[in-house]
Length: 377
Image (tube, rainbow, N blue to C red; front, side, top):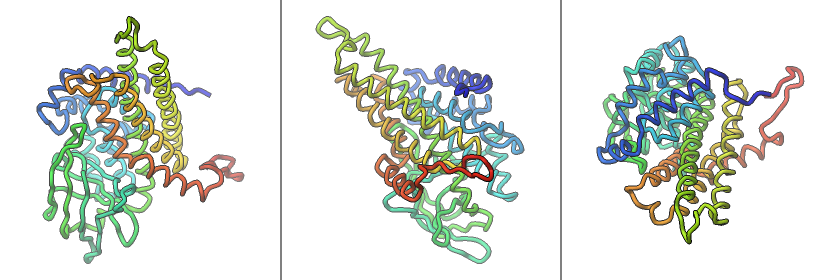
């Protein structure tokens, strides 16, 4: 069995890696910190020019029609460079609309593919202790939205958002045009610099077509987890690389501190966590691309992404010593990113609890076999 990327995927990974690495130097990241820009507009323009913003959008709507493995290698490169661009939310929101939105929502997909509209999304209600705070109530042929969405990424920069709402007691995805009357935003900034805003909705009117079928959420959630985990993989991999470089050069007692057993064990633990995340993420992307169900694989990946982000970030900061908390030194940015990604994934405890609930009702650990069709389900 061949576990390597194919030639096209290798080319995409190399192109994305070079693009992000060239643009996101430590000096440019420092400048971005000072300007407070919501995302890197110049880099986003390059992503549009190279088609990275529409890799997963179907070809019928002017995208590239590629799979999660292709998107994964791009997001890993983005994470390594800490590239502040809205790649995954934009195209996964558009792709969900393409698959489940119907003809009325197709214009949003084509606008997203052409970068004429920026889309965002939030699934935070699935893992929040407060649950889903947005309520959709029937209003004639349409709906009325009331409630709140906390910390929606790029809410004030996007034209539309795919959000979770309670629809007749069921969690459903709804498309919200952010320019509609009744949408109020309270802006803020995440620790890693991404612009966010709380949305407050007071009776916002929606057409009936704005509510997606229930299958859309089951399709989108594992792909959102894979995207966030791919970013976490890139952030953690570069964090380890920089830390190994630092402990090799840093000397104490006339020795490289990388020769100390405690430092070696810390970095070994970090590497094990990284490779565990990589293995589960690749399996998840394979199953999604093969059209196989992956509920437990997604939750396992989310848990390991949170755990790896925490462990790698902690070990890297620890062995850097005092310089690790110096904001003029770049390693702190990776810690900020890993914490933000873990938060977006819902945290280790919440994902482990959901995974336990799922496995308690499935004695095959997520693997079932259809004897009649002779294939794994």
